[in-house]
Each structure stands twice: as C-alpha cells, then as structure tokens.
Image (cartoon, rainbow, N blue to C red; front, top):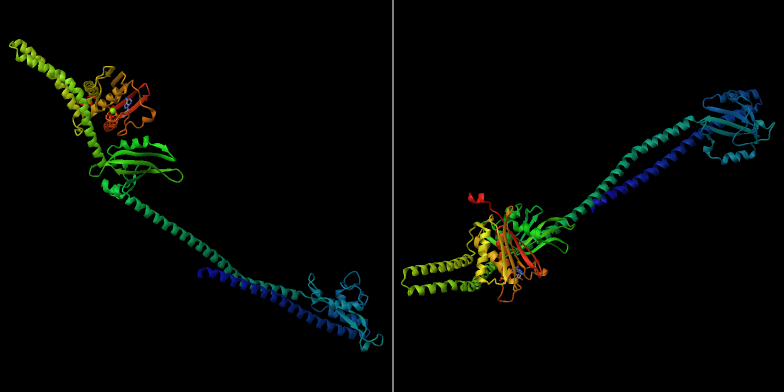
Length: 585
Ligand SMILES: Nc1ncnc2c1ncn2[C@@H]1O[C@H](COP(=O)(O)OP(=O)(O)OP(=O)(O)O)[C@@H](O)[C@H]1O
Ligand SMILES: [Mg+2]
C-alpha cells in the first residue's frame, strides 16, 4: 500500500508545482510587460510634453521660421522618428524638415479629422495602441492649447493644433523580447526538471503498477503451485496407498510411475524402475504387445485392455500372475501420453486354479481311462485266454506260439498305457525339447481314438514330415487332445474331422477342423475364458481351450479360430519351426 501511494503523491506534487509555476509564469510575463510598457510611455509622454511646451513657446513668438527650426531640431534628435504639428482638421501645419516625406503634406493617420472629439477618442485608446509594432515606434499626440502669450490672437485655452511625435520604440521591443526569452529560459530551467520528475513519477508509477501486477500474478502462480502440490501429494498418496499395482509409462514404454505396491511385489525401487523399459517386468514381452494390439476402442478411450492375465517377473526372478487393466493415458486434448496399467496380484488364486485344473485333468484322465480300460480289456482277455491255454498245453511249439500271442497282446496293452501315461505326465514337467509336431498330433489322435468311439466320424489327416518345433511334448499333446475332443463333441451326429500339420516358412502350421455345429458369434470371444462352457454340468469344465491358449502362447505360438454356425469350426495353430540343421547342432 505504501509503495503504491508514493507515485500518487509525487504526481499530485508535480501537478501542483506545474500549476503554480505556470500561474507565476503568466503573471510575471504580463506584469513585467505592462510595467515596462508603462515606463516607456511615461518617458515618451514626458519628452513629448517638453517638446510641446518648447514648441508653444516658440510659436507664441509668431515666427514660423523659428518654429520650423525648433521642430527640425527636435526632429533630428536621436530616437525621434516623426515630428509634426497638425491643424485641427488633421492637415499638416509644420513638419520637421529632415523628416518631411517626398510628395507633399500629410494628414494625421489613425484618428481622422481632428476636432474636440479627437482627445476623447485618443484618451479612450489603450496605451499599447500607440505602439506601432511594424515600425517599432510609439506615437504621442499632444494638444497645443492657447496660453497667456497667445491671447492676442486666440482665446485662452482653446486647441490650436496637435503635436504628433513618434519615438523609436526599438529598445522597448527589444527589452520585451529579451524579457520574454529570459522568462522562457527560466521557464525551461524550472519546467524541465519538473517534467523529468513528472515523467520519472509516471515511470515509477507504471513500474510499480507492473510490479504489483507481477506480484499478483506471482501470488496466483504460487497459489496454483500450492494447489498443484497438494493435488500431487494427494495423488501420490492414492498411488502409494492403493493395494493395486499402478505402473505408468511414456509413449515409448519407459516407466514413469511405479507405486509402492509395485515396489513391494516386484522388488524394484521407483527410482530404479523409472526410465527403464516396462517390458523388463514381463515374463513374456509379447504379452504386453498383444494386449495393446488386441485392445478395443471404448467410450472415448483410445484403447483399453481390461482384466487380462499377464505374468510379471520380479527383480529376483519370482513370477507373479497379475490381473491387469492396461489403458492409454490420454491428456485433455486427446493426445496419448503413454499407458497406465493397474494390476492385482492373483498368484494365490492362480495356484488354487492350477490345483483345480490339475484335478480336472486327472478327472479327464479318468474319463479317458474308462474308454481306455475297454481297449486294454481286449488284450488282457487275449492274454488271459492264451495263459489258460498254455496251462493245459504240453506241446512246446504251440506253447511258444501262444507265448508270442501273449507278447503281442501285452505289447498292445503296454502301448496304450504308455500313451495314457504320456498324457497324464504332470504339467510340472516343464522340460522342452525338439519334437516333431506331426508325431505329437498323431499320438493325440491315437489317444483320443482309444478313449472315444469315432464310428460315425470320418478322420482325415495330412501330417507332414518337416514339422520340428521346440516344445514340451506332453503339453502340446494336451493341446491337440483338447481340440480333437471338442471337435468330436461338436459332431454328435457324425461328420468329418480333418487334421493337418505342415511346415510353412518359419512356422509349423497345424489345423483341426470339424463339420460340427459351429460356435455362435456371441461366444467366439469367450471360448478361451476359463470355465466358459456350453456343455451341460458334468460334461465340460470350460477349461479345455483356456489350457490350450496358455500352452500355445507359452510356446511362442498363436491360435486362431474360424467358425460358421451349422457348418463347422477350424482351429489354426502356428508354432515357430526348428530347422533340422539347428536340431542337429
Ligand atoms: N470345435 C468346436 N465346435 C463347436 N464349439 C466348440 C468347439 N470347440 C469349443 N467349442 C465351444 O467352446 C466351449 C469351450 O470349450 P472348452 O474346450 O474350453 O470347454 P469344454 O469343451 O466345454 O469343457 P472341457 O474341455 O473343459 O471339458 C465349448 O463348451 C463349446 O461351446
Ligand atoms: Mg473342451
């Protein structure tokens, strides 16, 4: 407040100074001018009165010659510009010889014919009116009245004529001009500092106004900053207290935000993780790329992948199953700034699910086993029959041939048991090796054939030779067992099952097609979801395709489905191929 009143006070002071100064300036200007003018006029009047007195004295002598001589004498005095006596009619009576103009006599100018009124007119005139600015002269008209000496010829105190004297007023005008100049200089000397003061006052005022505006802006900014800090602190609190993992990245996938839950689970400190590629957290980086490419455009969001399962790896290498919702981080203007991932650790849930899957798998083996038991029953019956026959037989040759049959039946049963045990080998066995996908598919088909009668189903297969992949054979076999069983279930009234496995460039491509009832459009996006099934309770768990999807992606492969209701379904799988050369090294 104090700062602001200073320029105002200054401005008022300067204004008062200026006003006083201008008033003084005008007053002194007019006053001095008048004083000097009055002084000049008084001097001139005095001289002209002296002239008039002297001339009257001479004139009363009645000698024109002397009158001329006196007039001429005065007329030649320095400073006298014009000197003459005029009759009352205004015509010239005497004129100083040296001043006489060429071309005859003169009339009194300005006033016109002189009479009694002449004096009245001349008295009402301003003093300044007698100054001629062009000629720089001062003219005085003095009445010549009859005196004692004149009463012989004239009545006393009657006007006889007019004395006109013009004095040079050069010096008068010069003095005025000098005074004027002096006052101007003085005025400038006083006015310039005042003006300077005024201007600096204005500048200071503007500066202070700007300063206060700046201060206001600064305060606003500080307030905004405080609000922002509060908001930031609040947001940070939300992030840190959230029991969900929150990880944000920039557009290049570099980690920006890494909340406390993420720190606790993944064992990286925020500072350590910030700026690093988020892919380092994924067990399989493809998962993230797939999430982004598969996510849908929804309600103004650019993209969002909701509740997807991903596997993240902690700093010490522990794996965590995370239910992740990944979406684009979009600013007010719709520009993508990066991604925000909000995840929940579902590892425990997942373990329970695995246990369930394992038990379901065992249950599945049970289903398979009932079919297989029937298959094994035949060789067992054969073995039993042959063994009984051997018991009553003495002929070594026949016994040998029975023994050969027993070996044959036992080998058959052994094969079936082997196939079943390959399937039931626990998923704990993670070992991968180079396997021929055609062989794995063939084994899967055999296994299913043992378990399920395919009487009304025609099976066509084309299994190529060059189909090596790097995989866990029992898991991949599980994939095809599931796909084939699904296909068979879809063809209750019979149909055709077509299985292909061929090398295609850098991939081995396998297809399982059926001519069954097909998958309705509304189900197609849900078939890989765990527990999604259209089968009646007790007939299906809905885990088949879920397991298939997991195994395929785990092997770096892909799975696609094409289906038409009432026409059939084709599952296409692709696995990275392994070359023979690679294999042999
Ligand atoms: N070849 C197919 N033809 C038609 N529908 C299919 C086919 N394969 C899968 N489905 C549909 O997808 C659903 C899910 O299949 P999935 O294998 O995951 O479970 P399921 O076969 O029902 O049960 P489970 O395999 O656990 O015994 C099936 O219920 C069925 O509706
Ligand atoms: Mg199934």
